[in-house]
Length: 127
Image (cartoon, rainbow, N blue to C red; front, side):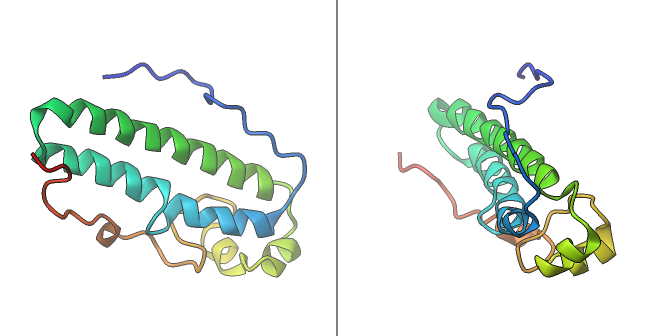
């Protein structure tokens, strides 16, 4: 296991409200190539590779979860002070209508995250 410190490894500094940038970052939160999909992909693939590299994929997968936490923090800070009109102008109106300001695993188009984003293709590293 690992030790979780209740602070970000790298501080997230956001100096202004910018819901348009938040919409771009949402792709990294819940999109097909985002941090959640990457973390789960690494953690899933570790079961079908040689024992000598299982630990490496575990480390990478958990690091991807740290990236997810940083992206979530950025999205939150970029939208927390936005008015509803600003969210709508940034293309986040449907998100606001469904989730208010809560983060939701979706891509920038508003499509919900799906397990099909995790492609298991067999052995990740040739023996």
